Image (cartoon, rainbow, N blue to C red):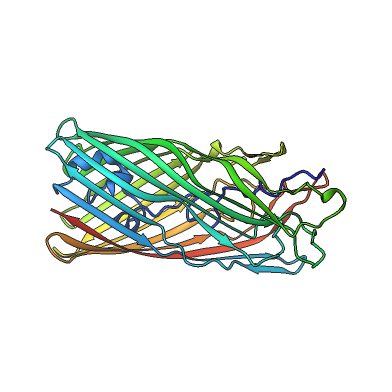
Length: 416
């Protein structure tokens, strides 16, 4: 019996994402504009995500920040040896975030965040050269995070809270490189599951040795998303021979780790107008060793991923031009966790250089408009995925990947 590996290589992995692996680094307009720094920057309820310990240092009694981004991206694949060239057909995706913070008293604050740290997708032309690996895939993961922040004294605070993650996945690929039905249509499978839930937590610390200098630390735990009894729908399977019954529609179980992250950073107010910030982020991608898929008919597939831990280095700058207008800019370098030989087209992500900018305009004493933009340039790479199997043999899929993305964003902040 042909081993069912058609799901395992791409199931539950996102493609069109804008940080290492399947992580999305779009968690706030103010902080994104500053190179996605924020673990030691005190300026809004975006701290619910970046460092909940900082909520007690906010001046406002109550503040809300909400925003969304529009992701415009391009992916191209080329193999000159075989004359292959393909571009993705992906549309615009819109990750979002909403944060609220309330100061109970001088030493205690609470907050709530709803945001999308993992997700999006990719769509290649049907039956393209790599269709045995992926035709299209989408992944969504929304986090709900209540938090509490406690100030120990004028210089030190702690914060944290639980995280409820809710996710869904939809994925299609051809079952192999050649199989068709009598009408010549390629045999394929669609995987679908929704309502996936899991729990994690976040903890933070903020220290302000002086009014100008701030140090922050934030940790978010690993969250294991487990799909149980998801639908596996096979189409265009030819009848007869040993195909009979092999691809009957079955359910599946699978698990995907959303890795733990540790971020440390500092900010310094040069004067009343200028603020600089630096963050170092370490994502513990080594949790993603393999993708195990268990089918209700007793079949199983174990597929190596072997991701490595990866770092991101972020720099941000803020300039308060007037009482109403604040400018921001930044840069970050993001390491890819994908090792050589494990480079599949659903996660065509190499190291990237990321350039950011944006502004805040105060509409009134309580309302402000926040804008950001991010340009992502991934290093061009010639790579392969070496673990697709047919007839017991590894069949590498390789070529040159080029990709980039432009991501504008808008948000609004309200506070009093």
